[in-house]
Length: 219
Image (cartoon, rainbow, N blue to C red; front, side):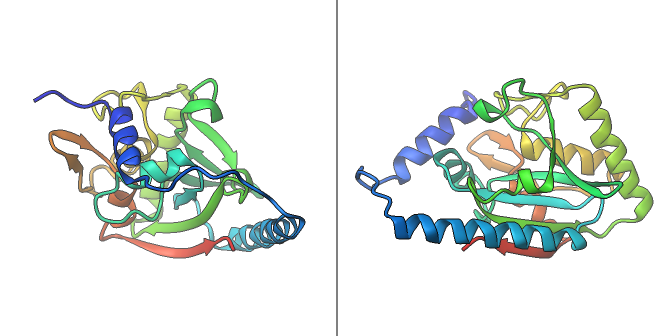
């Protein structure tokens, strides 16, 4: 059977699930004030959750754009989140390492973004922090794997192929860091669409050894 490119699957699923007719967007002054208040509240919540994040945590987010909505629909069991990365506490800062493609990441390499940038509420509407029940030594191994992929400039994988290690998509990058960093202790479920095999964001946070630390819904 021919393997479908995931980009085609995203477009197909999004097109099939979209029934809302186009309407002109009209933003009133009241809407602008309410949106600004929401953004300020969200940044305050993001700042507060810094105290709960630890090195090695799985960090997820839900984007509010068309691509994010389409990616969420690919999750086979839980469609809450569209993107993910791994947290690293470095001195007094928290960075999220994540694989990102498209116009948001022109050089296509793994990114190292401050938490506030990764979670910003302008283009996201939800943030989740999850933690795997593994030892500190294994978490250190996970971060060593993260830093290794980052230093080697691993590129985003537009083919969404689990085999290659020089190109990875977001959930694949996170999956391989936890899998190899834990020395195979963490075994993850793989998802399928017909014969196409992939790792969904939900395959990560629904792992039996993973629990939610906190979640923020921007509103």
